[in-house]
Amino acid sequence: MTITTERQRHVAPMHKQGGLEAGEATTDTIAYVRISHIVLPLKTAISDAKVLTGRQKPMTEISFTFAEIESREGHRGIGFGYSKRAGGAGMFAHAKEIAGELIGEDPNDIARIWNKLVWAGASMGRSGLTTQTIAAFDIALWDMKAKRAGLPLAKLLGAHRDSVQCYNTSGGFLSSDIAEVLDNVSRSIDAGIGGVKIKVGQPDPMIDLRRVEAVREHVGSSFPIAVDANQQWDRTTAARFGRILEEFNLFWIEEPLDAYDAEGHAALAAMLDTPIATGEMLTSVAEHRELIRNRSVDFIQPDAPRVGGITPFLRIMSLGEEAQVKLAPHFAMEIHLHLAAAYAQEPWVEHFEWLEPMFNERLEIRNGRMIVPSRPGLGFTLSEQANAWTVATAEFGKRA
Ligand SMILES: [Mg+2]
Image (cartoon, rainbow, N blue to C red; front, top):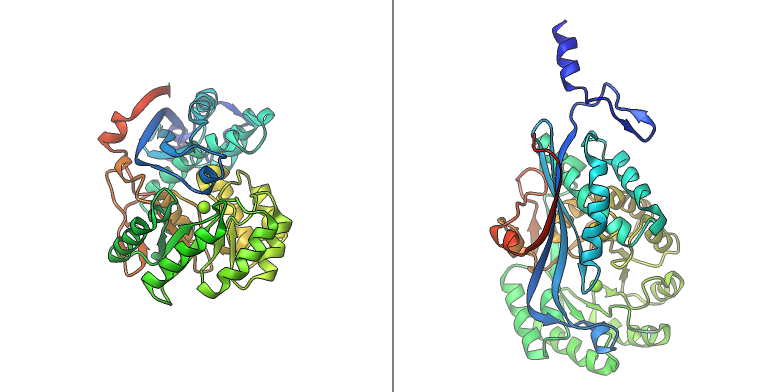
């Protein structure tokens, strides 16, 4: 009789979801969701090739929608989606539209919740702003699940390693002149970071070439260097410049072509010995499947907040592993370190210090590698500074 009583206490209140009622396996329900629109200012205006070709303005801030979720049993998780330049207010508005869908759901049923949220906004498409908004909730639920298990997320997923080789991107932007880039590279190496990435893709590739030559000379012949053209070459330029770059022993050429040119990337990947990397701009599993199916990439570069969170990211990891493609997630090292640690082939994780002021915790870097934190979940809590940068909040349900 005691067992029956216990079970009754843990079964969720009766509620309809996806046409089914919560079953007896349900042990907890989502009681409260708080979403925050946080705008992080950058120390200096940042430019990649999209600015030099006139397509975008320099970046001065990053907009986040954070989700904080609490369950009836007192478990908590945080996650975020982000946008650069535009879209932040739209993401927060869509999050407000769908956050109420979580209340009463079992927080462990993450896949079913993901489907519920994507169908809520599916008339806007199952990619783009729709999926990027869902990411905040999905990541928060995975954070909660790992915390509930008392494990770092990497361990919950099934880690292959406890640290991941990392490279720095923030020091190699085109808004820095070459002297500043070399200084940043030195500081990055001194900090124990295992590689550097230099932005290219300017209208005159010969100016890019001089920057790559200077960095290679600065770091010596074997230190890992990559370049990133941010989609600003056409196929001819990518082929000609790609051949010139072969001698620099780069660990990859990133986004040489338009993000949706799967055929062009495949031809380039077949032609060059230097590995090809792309995928950061894609916002669905379907788009990544296209790159993998066409053998467009040597390194696939999904971004969990962009593809809709950890649930779809895991599906991309499965596709990549089966196709023998390597993984190098884009941005948000705070999340991607855990995911990269759970990938079969040795991945790279991208080091950006930009988000550090948002959190109370810091990631440790040693001997070229980023160490998976031993804290449960993602291992991050929002800082007081992040609260100060909050421009709007909305609450759903009640704190348990
Ligand atoms: Mg990039």
